Image (cartoon, rainbow, N blue to C red; front, side, top):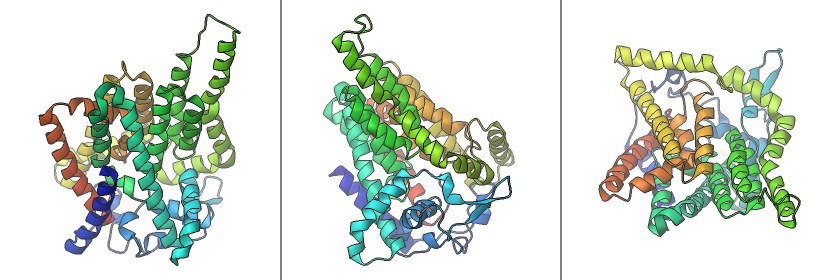
Length: 397
């Protein structure tokens, strides 16, 4: 019921702000957003111009909708020129499982008589919402042993009201990925390795950080093995369960063979993202430092403060939960490291939304009433601001 109320309120709020407010353009949150947030910036993006549930789509939503409705080579998506002179659709920079699920959910929704883009939009929102619900359930079972039912509900609620929690109700991967990853981690704690491995593999096909689930999966499996009873029946059964540990790696290898080359080329060429992209990091830090030194662009200053605060919170959370939740903490720290080192500091507060250690730490701290009410007030206010900005196609994360 908490999930349902939140879903209705977030989507309803997005309609309300559209009816009540208008924002000055462009958005100056980063160095590149002014040219992307003018009044007519969406005119060349047909997947973002459909009126139906238009407030639930922006930015990367375009590519998930295109893949779901028209495949990776949909001609309506812009092309990127690669280093060898060939071109590739920008959609290749995005993983396939979320749009594949959207496409599957779209099939029965065709009876509603909506056009293909509207149908894909509705299916994307539904997939995100259901994923968010399972993310709540996963968090609940992760912390219930330590914090009880009340603590489990608190962790799930903090997940929904995180400053970027509205992404869980948009055409974005956060909802589905959190549902798969958090439930996988919960199943690991209950020694359900094959189910956990399957969910981890699907999470890997949703976002690249899903591969990091192999670490907690291996750790949880290793703790069940009687290494002294080599070749006993129990040990052989443990080895069979150990094969489940490899499922995320197998999933990543399959994706890499099919789409990995194009993904890397488009990510680097157009989006400027990559593994340990130190040049991009330095460029982004220089831009942020200039904004604070000059002190004129308050939009950019607020944006980078929120990015830095989210990273600091995730880092502290990963370290604070390392002793009691080693697998969860290691996954959280690896996911954070991959995000922070992928390029210019951008979208980090959104990536932190899928780091479970954050909500475990907050649920612990929230046992104090003052912390609970204080964090809830701060988080909801920031959530409202961020949701409003996204609804007007401004850059949030």
